[in-house]
Image (cartoon, rainbow, N blue to C red; front, side, top):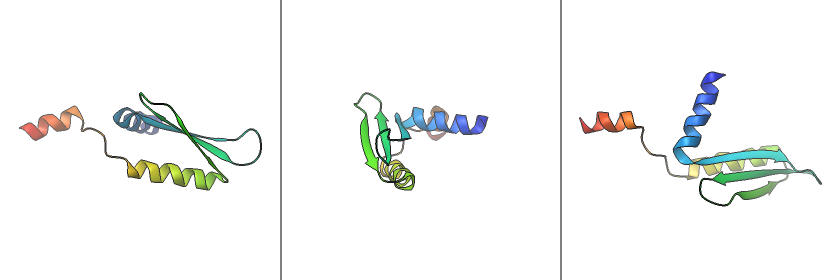
Amino acid sequence: MIAIIDAWEADNRANGISYEIERVRIGDGYQVRKMVRYAEPQTEFFASLIDAQAWVDADKLSRRPGRRKLSEKKEASH
């Protein structure tokens, strides 16, 4: 459990983007809320949970990788 939380925190800290998937309250379907640091949240609607998760996965793959860790920078400079 701790490893899962640490991985989530590292990913969120590196890119400043987090996602929330929740069922819509009125009607059928799911909404994905993409929250980018220093920007307005973006909301997308999907018919199924599978479609929502697929969009999140594709969006994660489309962004640029985050900055390298400080320890990696030190090793590269030596």
